[in-house]
Image 1 (tube, rainbow, N blue to C red):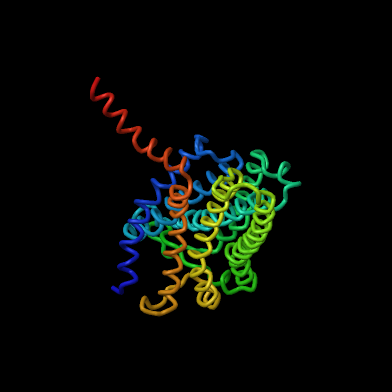
Image 2: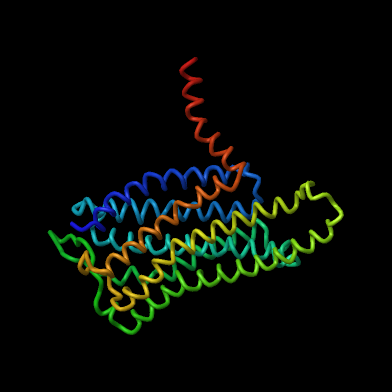
Length: 322
């Protein structure tokens, strides 16, 4: 067995063991609203954590661990396989587009002051998250009809294989191009473009503010600039993590998957296979990094994280003493 397969067998369980509780804790902490973040930002961050948690549960646990290591379980019944494939695509799509929605919200808050009061609201954030979720599910519906059973045993359909008539048809090829554009290239370009506008806006505003405060001592702090700095660090950390971890998957998809739209089943030592699997490893890692980013950049999030982790042990000690 080649080293890539060995790495996957170790990597995915470790990733699930860390990513599942991390995203669950993030959802709980952000939902409590004690992190000093606006309710609007919290809606997007909770949505991102929820999508990342689904990626850990379905994409990593159910597909890469349970289905792979237990090939005769109910997870390999064809109907369940199709559902898992559909959920895998929708989970990744929601994770990507919730990140884009978060970036758009911060862009409007920083660069579009006149539109900020109308858009950066909890109600708008809830509508955006709901709309994105529905559209992602609708776009991925064709995956439910793109696979056929691999074998039939005692009238039970097991496994799945790509339907050649779908994947080799012009409609199927066009659909995969659309999936590539919607899941990678458009979000990638949007995040880069919006962040560049935000950087330019910040530089201009910072110079103007320094000019207005020129007579003030340099040692005196500026609360508004400090708050803006924390918000920008959070945004750039989330965006930078997404771009860096998804870049390999984007390149490998263009170089391998588009030339063979069906699921890649080539030689495990082939460069195309190694590039594709490396892209997946990094792509799934992006569903674990946001918790680390919040803990590193948000003081109140760290405090809430410590409080949530300590609370079960505090309760146990209290009950023990009683």
